[in-house]
Amino acid sequence: MTVAAVLVAAGSGSRLGHELPKAFVPVGGEPLVVHAARSLLAGGDVAALVVVVPADRIEDARGLLAGLPCPVAVVAGGTARQASVAAGLAALPDEADVVLVHDAARPFPPADLVARVVGAVRAGHPAVVPALPVTDTVKRVGPGDGTGEPVVATVPRGALRAVQTPQGFARDVLVAAHAAAAARAHDEGTAASDDAGLLEERGVPVWVVAGDERAAKVTTASDLWLAARRAEELS
Ligand code: CTP
Ligand code: MG
Image 1 (cartoon, protein in one colour):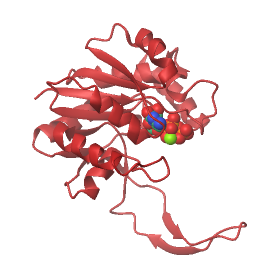
Image 2 (cartoon, helix red, strand yellow):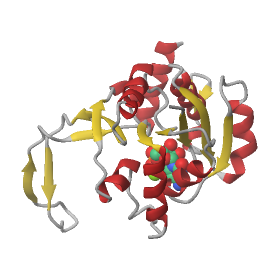
Image 3 (tube, rainbow, N blue to C red):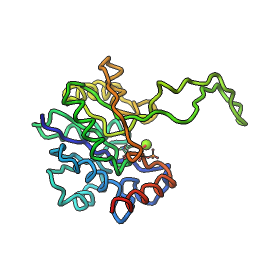
Image 4 (tube, rainbow, N blue to C red):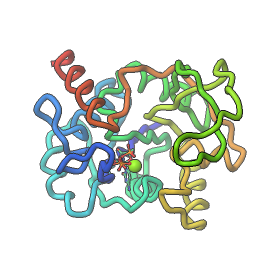
């Protein structure tokens, strides 16, 4: 089986509020997207990479990603993450039959995490997500009045998982789910926030393997601070 990865890096990073698009913000001297690409390739499972970036960053990204130890295609993303993943899928090499989808906003997924996801797809699971147990207490709330909102219920957290990337898929199953979803013309508000969600909607079984806190996502400025500490640790 040949594994390729789609690395989505076409978001703006509005919650981070940096002058650069989030994936191009440096930590430890290099942009998040470069760290993420290297992390994906570190274990040697991934044979080709498609990196999806804002249309006006394609040349910049090609320069940043030159010299990686596998073929790298760089393509333009869309206005929602789902559209960016779809653009990446369209540029996959023919021989890829297993696809990882990874967020550039997660710069440091450890090699053993990537290997766990790939291993579970190779073992026959068509869709695999890494996830961690939820540690916060989670409550469902009702409509608020501007000053607060009422609790409706406390959600038992024993069976809850916070899902990460890379997520791994049998290529044909993922491509079919994206094609069906694109036909419904989602925007960022209604699109599935991960790829496995599109498969769940179609009744495809999704398998969970252990995640890793080092695969944390950079969303806000304090996440960036933590990513910089990780970059130091790894250097
Ligand atoms: N992404 C993308 N194309 C989009 C939106 C998001 O490729 N139109 C990518 C981001 O670059 C990121 C990943 O999807 O690597 C996860 O998205 P998120 O963390 O939400 O990043 P942004 O959308 O950039 O951030 P924000 O939502 O704060 O604007
Ligand atoms: Mg976003």
